[in-house]
Image 1 (tube, rainbow over the protein chains, first blue to last red):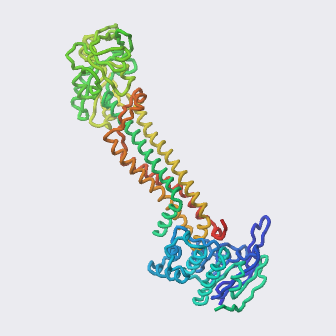
Image 2: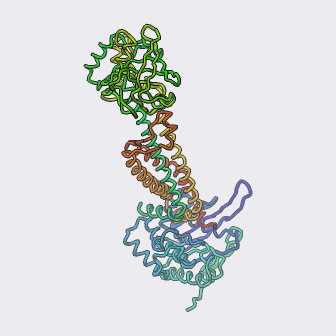
Image 3: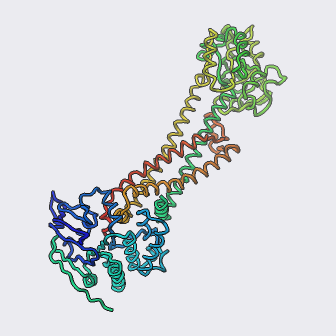
Amino acid sequence: MAIIKTQDLSKVYNPDTIPVHALRDVNISFEEGEFTAVRGPSGSGKTTLLNMLGGLDKPTGGSVWINGEDISAMKDSDRIDFRLKNIGFVFQHYNLIPVFTARENVSFIMLLQKRDKKEIQKRADELLDQVGLGERKDARPVQLSGGQQQRVAVARALASEPKFILADEPTANLDTKAAMNLLDIMERMNKEENVTFIFSTHDQRVIDRARRVVTMVDGAIHKDEVKEVTQAG
Amino acid sequence: MKTLLTIAWRNIWRHPARSSVMIIAIVVGLWAGVVTVGIMNGMMIQRTNYMIESEITHAQIHHPEFLSEGYSRLYIPDHGNITAWLDEDERVQSYTNRTLTDGMIQSAVKTSGIRIRGVDIEAERATTTFHENMTEGEYLDSDISNAVIVGEALAEAHNMDIGHRVVLTFENVDNELTSGAYNIVGFFRSASVNYDERNVFVRAEDFNRLLSPEPLVHEIAVMLNHEEMADGFVNDVNSTFSGIEAQTWRQLSPELSMIVELGGVMMVVITAIIMIALAFGILNTMLMALFERMRELGMLISIGMSRMRVFAMIMLESMILTFSGAIVGMGIAVLHLSYYKDAGMNIEVFAGGAAQLGWDHIIYPVLTTNEYVAILSVVICITLLASVYPAIKGVRVNPLEASKSN
């Protein structure tokens, strides 16, 4: 069943001066449990598509439906609340709160959800263990490597128990080892806990691991292929 | 709320040097402002009290034209009726009769224009504190006949010393020039050099012998139980007696009244200057902090932190930053003022000039609880106002900022 669906989704920047068509009537859907990479050259519209799917930006045409709700028609405050409850984000630049420890960064989103304190503590610890940072829970971002920070970001995205996670170029700033390690973690979460991941990426390492690859060119879907990924080991 | 407080507190210490400088600036600014206001308050109160207690008193009664003309013939008619009335009035703490006229003092060196003040020693002592201004020699209760006390400044100008004789010349009640030889028995120093140069004191009975066949009273100075009673008292005297005019100290000394009013205005001005500096300091610090964190704020809004919470977080940061400094600054100011309230603050370095203007050089700063509360309330309001703009800017951050590179 499709948890995300777009209908004639369009985005035009500068419509009154020099219009730039970032998205052109995109119709696409994503099923629960997918591990999908959205690829394409710079300016192809992949980040814009992810921003629309995450409700971070409003389309100039068409709509985005998540679990049957049209998020493009929502008020800004409702969209923020919707994101808190339904969507996890992993950013290229990690974007952790620098004054918080790894545990506090993971706990923060659950505090926003007003969950029970004990439950928050337990889940934050579990998630940090799962991403291999059980020993670095009290470290601040500045004390962690890029790969470790991005793993904290994945734990944070998972903490809110979202319907799906949007990851914008998650491996762009990581070396191969850290990138592969991160992909292993996300793939395991996908397989073991059926977490849906949608990436925008240039990175061939991510594309190789994705089970579905959507290729965008000039704001439109050029190719959408589902493949069988052969896992080493 | 606890989470917001935690994040706000830690955000402040993200740049310890910047926040410390801001807090120190608030501490120093508030301390300096509060102490300055306290000193000014103290100066105003001391000056007012001194003038009231040493000479002016709460109210005075004169012939309606005496203050503008100064002639000895403009005395208070039937002053006995008035003093009998004063004896019966419960508001009156004490009063004293004075015989006054303008004249000249002639020493071996030169001649100067002065006001001659004939006083009833006992009543004057019971009513004012002027006798406490004696710096050398005796007060007028000396055994020496025709005693006169002069200001230090006048004595210096005339090269006079105790025991010297001077001649006082003035118009008597019949407009005839009269002179008398007086013996200097003491020197006084009031808070005003100008006053000291232009006034001499003699015993009223000595003065009256030369002035008129009958004892004259030109001024009745009245000390009341409370300063607030002055207006009502003066109204009652004016409606009861004719041919005289009673005035409060504010009417008698408009410059003193103006100083009191100005003191209030100065307090507002000083507080406003400090607060404007504080407001710009907060605004600058918070805007710098905000612009550095646009991507982080975008991330917070992206992951689901409401704009209201972002607003509250930024406001909290400003409030914590300001209050940390304000509480310490206020605390130091309270300790400082508490100490000097009793010990007095010696501003002798500046007192040369201050004395010319009639100010004491030992200042006892005063700041009431209401004034502390008022200053703190203004700090709170200014902080809130100065924080609103950065907070609104923070609220308006686009969540897409989270995806941007530095």
